[in-house]
Length: 255
Image 1 (cartoon, rainbow, N blue to C red):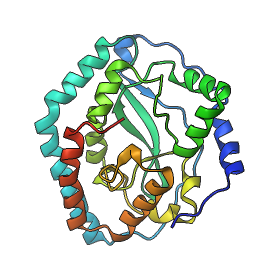
Image 2 (spheres, helix red, strand yellow; image 1 turned 30 degrees about the horizontal axis):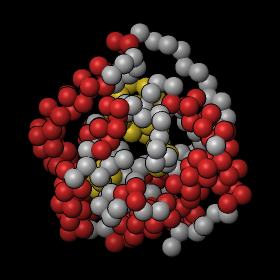
Image 3 (cartoon, helix red, strand yellow; image 1 turned 180 degrees about the horizontal axis):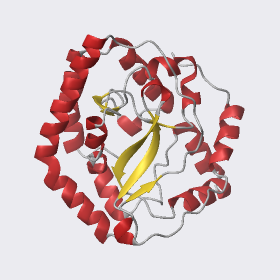
Image 4 (cartoon, rainbow, N blue to C red; image 1 turned 120 degrees about the horizontal axis):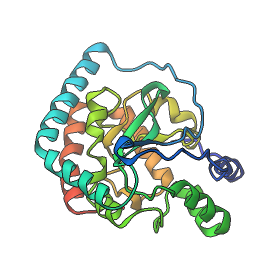
């Protein structure tokens, strides 16, 4: 079970998030299709024992095969999502989240943009003005009623359409189809001593957390599910999670 960090340390770390972020220069819309998220915490890569060459090769073949087939099937949905974001107002179509990958390497996790372009400023103001929202953010790293999300973004998130571009992260070898959640660079502290275990594998587009209640489970439970997956992962488990993901997505349980 993951080690718990005391509340005072969590609150102190979260104060860093609400510090003013460097404003980005406005760029012409046609030339700013992807917006990069600021790197919240500089993180040193980890080097931990991982699966053997044969197991990694099998996993990689499965990831590439599923990603290519999925792209062939869902490219009209990806195109539709991009058009909806483009029509929703000014701003880039895609958003590159800085996330921790295998061995602690930082990579750009690509999603369709679902938030307003001034989302960072809105979050800072909310956390400064509302103790209740600050407590919710510290506990879950999410806001259930998040005013930063656009109307189009709510639809895309509900059916996980915003995550379709992550198939390209899979093809680039930065993610797997199934794995632990890709974490923001300031979330490693929540995993305590189990951090190295969880990041001995690639993060996934889907995983145990997504098919076990998703945003209805506590943050601590998410940590436990990620650690459990990294410990017992196998081909049968991956195939099971992929199949269980289909009704979850079609049921529109994303937030």
